[in-house]
Amino acid sequence: MSILVVGSTALDSVETAYGKVEDALGGSAFFFGAAASHFTPVNLVGVVGEDFDLGQLDFLKAQGCDLAGIAVEKGRTFRWGGKYHKDVNKRDTLFTELNVFENFNPQIPESYRDAKYVFLANITPALQLQVLEQVHQPDLIVLDTMNLWINIAREDLMEVIRKVDIMILNDEELGDLTGEVSLFGGAQKLLSEGLKAIVVKKGQHGAVLITPSGMFLASAYPVEKVVDPTGAGDSFAGGFVGYLAANGGVSPENLRQAVIQGTVVASFSVEDFSLNRLKGLTKGDLEKRTAHFRELTRF
Amino acid sequence: MSILVVGSTALDSVETAYGKVEDALGGSAFFFGAAASHFTPVNLVGVVGEDFDLGQLDFLKAQGCDLAGIAVEKGRTFRWGGKYHKDVNKRDTLFTELNVFENFNPQIPESYRDAKYVFLANITPALQLQVLEQVHQPDLIVLDTMNLWINIAREDLMEVIRKVDIMILNDEELGDLTGEVSLFGGAQKLLSEGLKAIVVKKGQHGAVLITPSGMFLASAYPVEKVVDPTGAGDSFAGGFVGYLAANGGVSPENLRQAVIQGTVVASFSVEDFSLNRLKGLTKGDLEKRTAHFRELTRF
Image (spheres, rainbow over the protein chains, first blue to last red):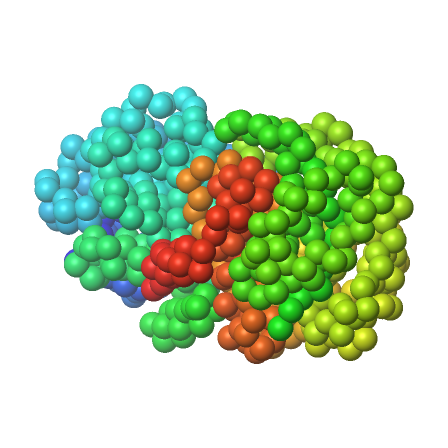
């Protein structure tokens, strides 16, 4: 089953201890698409500027991403620049140029509106609501967000949360959103809004899946060289939703495997800059790492 | 096989969000003994003052702790007082009265010197070396330490490290000791000192076992109410070394199970103040939680 994703499509300039890239593919929708398309076809909705070379997306098409939903608007493409510390959990944003993304007004192509799986990548909650008004009857809607919207658009965000099935967020965002110090306390509070499941990402410490009836604890896959952590969360979401869409939805077993596949795809994503590592990835790579991950954690 | 443990034996006054206790049993050796004795007999070496009521240790004897190595010295028992924040990962030390512990000079009873399993709980590295001089031919020596000794007694500590088999420490201590930002980089550096294994504790984020040939990633068991985290690390060590001593040493499989048993025992320890929860514990409790832990993490 294909997935509709709506999010940012950007050009990132990133510097880490391992080097730097300029104007490389980035943004939540591109990372998500590059990850999820290893599992199932993806329909992408986003906006780029006239300066954007669409040819660089050919590999995404080849992987199974439909790009008919990428609008090309007058102006420059959204650009973000950041520099990571030696401790890759810390970074400084060097610049954010919204450009055409500032007036992003997601139009879902007619052919995408019957989507059964929808991923609302990190954009303003108001735009996420606009997306939901355009889709007909999805089976599963998964939501991502960021601290900024929790702080400045909380009411809109709560409205989105009440309309979706699963929310993916990190432990800090969960604390900000619920005011709870404990991850489990926060998750219970958030579940009470009617969600089927919450995935709490803890970066290098793994992820926790919490549903009204149970819990699943996953470690992070140990990556020796984190070359560039940008997009790790969107890659995780891509593996997670991709697995669910390819395997018939949210059974408890599927949710577990989806968290593992999200973890595995994200572990590849951070091994190179931009989408570079997701680009060359094969089914065999995913299976081999999943088997190794199982070996590292079984008891 | 019995374990020799040498460490602090204290009376703790602790306040948390769930209440407070005064002059309750504490210290690394007591926590370790109360945990490890659920797996195998433990010989305890420590020092208390004349004010200490030895009768309160009857439950430890009943659990399989030999207390012939607890010296009673003129003066008052070591006392520590602390208050935890709402976020239990943060605490303030209210007072530290070393008392008789200031001149602790561990004398290993003749009957303990053939110990095959030795746990050097957190005391000064100089005293840890003194203990090692008194034991004959242990099969396995496991070391704990703290930031203070890394900062003020690094050379002594490195000497101890070169004489032991396994070191248990937390991620922060590993960073301080090795100067490495990454857990895996730090562990490799430390392994090069000749250790058979390192266990890196990450508190609520679990633990990682690293050996020269492999790795094992364990989540933390999710505890709903952390009533008092004091002694969690020593309880972990008790379950870890206890399991190894009871099951014939350091095979890769045993090391995995030992990390799990450490995790499970520690999860009980923090559910009540002082040694209270370790006191009532049964084999059935441990088995039931281990099974639940497996269910929470399998994939």
